[in-house]
Amino acid sequence: MTANTSKSKKLVRFLANNTVPILFLFICAFGIPLSGYSASYLISEIIVRLVRNSFLIVSLLIPILAGMGLNFGMTLGAMAGQIGLIFITDWGIVGLPGMILAMIISTPISMALGWLCGKILNMAKGREMVTSYIIGFFMNGIYQLVVLYGMGAVIPIRSKSLVLPRGYGIRNTVNLIGVRKALDDLLLIRIFGIPIPVGTFAVIALLCLFVLWFKKTKLGQDMRAVGQDMEVARAAGIRVEHTRIISIVISTVFAGYGMIIYMQNIGTLNTYNSHMQIGMFSVAALLVGGATVAKANIRNVFLGVVLFHLMFIVSPMAGKNLIGQAQLGEYFRVFVSYGVITMSLVLYEVRKKREQAVAGETLAAAQEVGA
Amino acid sequence: MRARRTLLIRLGAIALLIILSVVLFFVGKSHTVLVDNKATTREGTDLAALKLVEVEVNKLGSLELTPRDRDKFDVTGQKHKVTVTYTDERWEEHTIVRTFTVPLMQDMVMIEVPALVAFPESEQSVWLGKYEAPTYAVTMAESNEVVTDDLAVFMSDM
Image (tube, rainbow over all chains, first blue to last red; front, side):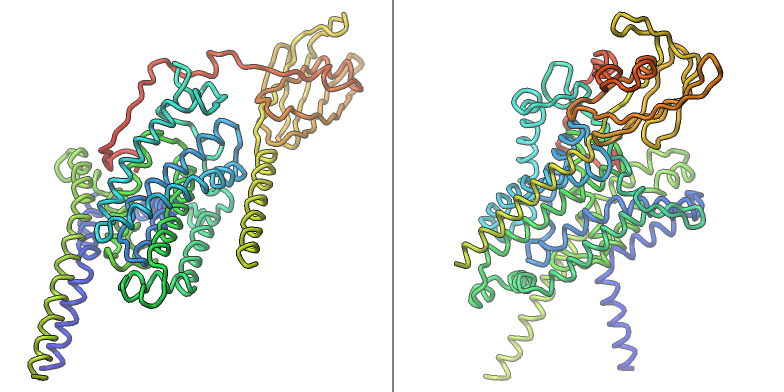
């Protein structure tokens, strides 16, 4: 009897902790047969999404370790990456050298923006997520000022195909033909006809190894301590504010690199919109993978990309086959994407409050026994 | 002492990155090499186009050109090799191999094949010239209104 109760409690806890991935599994299990896509098509699409998005999503892990929640400020890194891409396109630097140069250009910009973001987030402790989200909007204004009015006027841009007909400002779309698939095609192998970009996977694996190694370093342990309790960490001699800033700087720099990898896969830069979408769907994918605001690991990244993007791939066709309109699938996937973020945040808060209540009751009971 | 060492390491890292950037710039800079088989004039001599000529830049595959043909090779870096193979009026095959350097910031250069064949030992400036693409070829349509979207949705770019 007790064993059964314990098992059912475990099951309930497992379901409660994995509500979002389980829900997505159901959506995908329902949508895949309806969409009518073949397994090989779905696998090749998922591989494309994995190489395109994983690096960006891994960049979110370090701020979570430092207790700063989901870094919506990764859009700042994405902007820096895009600036790097605009410059190399203007200079005509192509292939892998172009990609690496774009990363080098983005690094100091990402570091400066990350440092600024970290400073502001230190002034808004406990409200990091909403603050970083708004910083993204604020910085988008400055990005637009620089790219739309500065480039071509103050910052020299030679290429006429980049500059707007008025003589300054960058066009809506930038063709990244020079770096398109530069990394993906580096070590491309085919297994059963499905292309596997080994080079990009190797870069993502390196980042994952870096994150695992980083967690074991002194700085990583400091971040973990800061994430668990800032006051205790401060009492232990850890420079809390400094550590938090470093976590945001690292995340922003990696987000910049991730954006460059993302863009080389797509091949076209949507100058004024691409970066704004990145933060939201990276966070959504991580949450779909079972991460919470306070806890995330590499498994969540890959599970999240697979489930979230599987839903993205199948829902339009499933919607079309179900009621004859692909548009419904489009609405559905947008609604589900925003919905999953909301649901994850609500579930996290509910769980946190429940744990606090249980801890309070336990403490009260212990005090009563003591009295 | 420790602060000084840290500063030196940081300065060294920055210097290394700058050097790497410069190397990447030189290695990754792309150029378009046009190969042109049109009649031209050099040093007062009229040079006719070749009836059939095979041109290859580096190892990018050879192109066959007939009179008034123009084609292109996309290359990276500054130093390249051009190989021209043609048959003269006595049906003897000749091959000319020359190396040339493209100016760093020049996007397009043009090799005039008849000039290269006529003066194979001359300086590269005799047969290689800078080329500026006409404006209509590099600018897109005028209707390029900037669209900024703060409330970006998931639909596009995914």
